[in-house]
Image 1 (cartoon, one colour):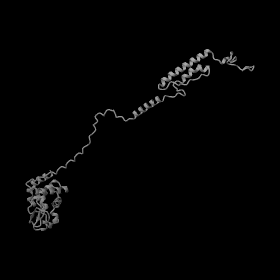
Image 2 (cartoon, rainbow, N blue to C red; image 1 turned 180 degrees about the vertical axis):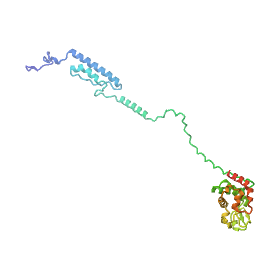
Image 3 (cartoon, rainbow, N blue to C red; image 1 turned 90 degrees about the horizontal axis):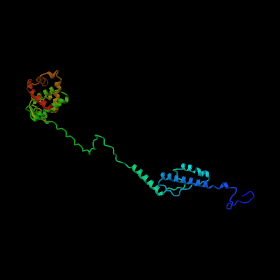
Image 4 (spheres, rainbow, N blue to C red; image 1 turned 180 degrees about the horizontal axis):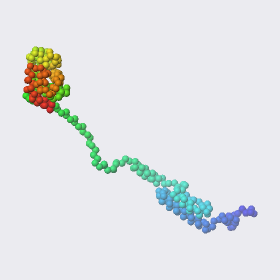
Length: 288
């Protein structure tokens, strides 16, 4: 509107006379167009490098407000490189493909893998199922054979004498004296007495007539050696003899016949010596 109240006719032949500065010149328009084209081309190339799967059409255009913004738009374009403009919608198919690849990659890293580490040098191979070892058979007792002219019954009685003496802790010399004494008194047989019928009620291997003398050592109940039942037991009879032998001072240094006679008080004191070598042989066989 002019000062005289007349409206400006921009479509008139003269146009707007007082706003000629609002009309951009041909040079300004050309410069802005070239700058905008260059900026858009550069940004499109950078976006293509950074996001090759993103869709290219449909990019929004930035409007230029003034010539100054147009000239400085190139600088603003550089600051927006790699940023998706508003309204730029990604391709759903491409996004799904990227997500699928990521899922497959994550799953493959989560799988349990067999170890490829080399085996430890010298490591023993895995053992096969163990086989229960059969228990070792207990060794059979050594069979003691009769020696020194004895039969098996006599040898068994000699073994009972040696075992009873070992239970008492009697040394080997005492075992030899005991075996030699039984050889002389009963020929290593467990005697019952015909004079003492009670003695025949117990296991016995022979019957004698020498008063009430019974057992391997022909000990008499009437002399205080023990009851008939006790004296018919080879173990008890042996321990009774050895207990009396150990009461003799220095018995181990005495001749066998002297030691035996001191205990037995026999009518034939020198008879025991003849059995010493045989008694040694028997004890040796039993002790092994």
